[in-house]
Length: 467
Image 1 (cartoon, rainbow, N blue to C red):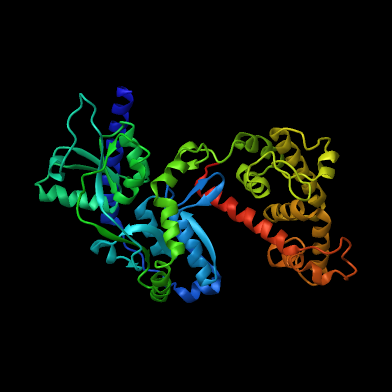
Image 2 (cartoon, rainbow, N blue to C red; image 1 turned 90 degrees about the vertical axis):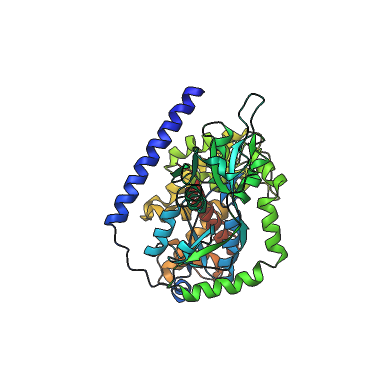
């Protein structure tokens, strides 16, 4: 263990040196790009808000197959208020988030950014939605250990790790200057507070500085850390937009002014920052950020998805939609198991409702392949094919064939789902008497929502879960 810790420390220090010299070189050579002119009117016209946020144990994560998080919940509510779709980009490197904002790749940085004078020169902040302080994270010494640090001055001569370009990094540098130097500040990109606290708790580093709000939650999970020493004064936290996005900032501020006073928002805070709720998530085998698993069946999703050339995360999203990963459930219509196979479908593939969960996945994938084969002759693009298969899995292939025929008859593309075949599925009951409709009426909204929700969840899985 000692040898491992030494190697890690040496590696982190070497990485930090490389980062320092590369950043210094870029600062000398780089020229700031002209800021993008994109504001509220453009977002409304596109019908889409693009936000970058960090993925960690509070902001945005996957828990038991479901996307969740403090920033995520707030962003969904904001998108609903604006009447647009939400697209999330994940990035834990603060500098890269600011770069994406400047280049117009995202519309808003939705993280708990400490409001600093330096950052205010580059971006406009929304109304603050929180407050935090920077704290020192250190291990509680054992009986034979050195005494814990009691005040910031004692950090002189110490090696302290912090997330690159964070408020904590700037505060540590200022503190080092104030005490006449001596603090070695190691800034790490892509090491957020969660990871830094874990490194301290496991003994791989001795000291880190991070936001108190995160440290408070984590201190109930890691019982061997001390977070009592504050490094500096409390700071307001907020989201950030480009300085050219004046109307967007005004709109977000108007929303926040009322939103932050609601019981709904207070419930969101409790949901993600109440220690008992965090501990419940952290103790689960399916808190992905800690365990790398979203369900008991991940290995079988990976295995059987290869037979249909699907991303396993897409198959997982379908199964979550069908059964919430429960293998022993039966619907009111008689569909059973992880894949919610109807009795006649299960019988066609030679099984019944008594088969085990692995067999359920195997047979469900065979059914997906059967559906794909039915569409093979239509020359449907691969990305579109997925939506046709999902819709057929929900409603039955006959209804989807009807909708394709309606699309062709009414001048729409029968090989494209969104705003084409999807329109006729959603409104199928209105066309029940059309001669090309052979499979009757359908509550099509259920099917279109089914496809939409699976694809949206799949995107969240891709944001957070590696292939």
